[in-house]
Image (tube, rainbow, N blue to C red; front, side, top):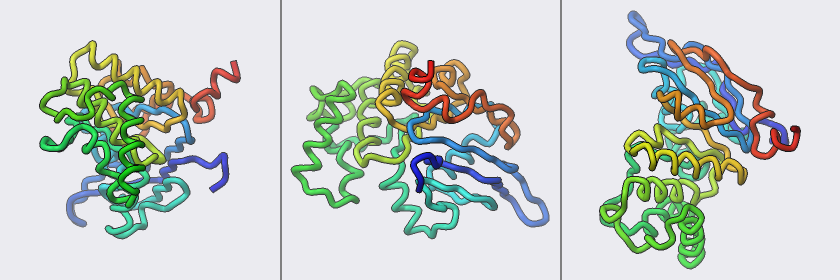
Length: 243
């Protein structure tokens, strides 16, 4: 993959459910490119196709037609085993409901993706301790999720998402279960990660939350209705350097 190639590229993505006689076309030809280091919010109302697009971006489902290239690989053509490998190594998931394992400590939760990578234990622990410090949660490493606030749980989930050094952070309504103040803190953390070079794709119905992203893509009725900027202007540092 060349240095200026998109980290993520969707080419005429179509997703159809139902039967051949009664098809329901949820995505109707999505074209989207995201460069390494971009922070993009995909926003749209209920029924716009956001959840379906999220599942395809997260390698949780395949499109009916079209190509999905992630870091130069045609994910849409992969079998179940290779899709699982992509989910575990190339994508960092941040969910609305955190999805932390209740009986594990924060440090153990953050380490989970690295078990698949077969990283030596000492290296795994050290990397995850540094990530917890990075997201402001180093002092809570030995606690279990029930002992954390909502914002702390989401910080732990973000640290876990970063542990495998993924090509992309995929955030699904990352502030959906948080109060306003905590939401602002989490959005500030995502902005910081973007400034440091992380590629972030956020799915949300909330236009105020979407406004925090430098680039916003509006989805409606299975089509991209608007895209408020070209990719190269929204890579971390690029816009500032050009100004």
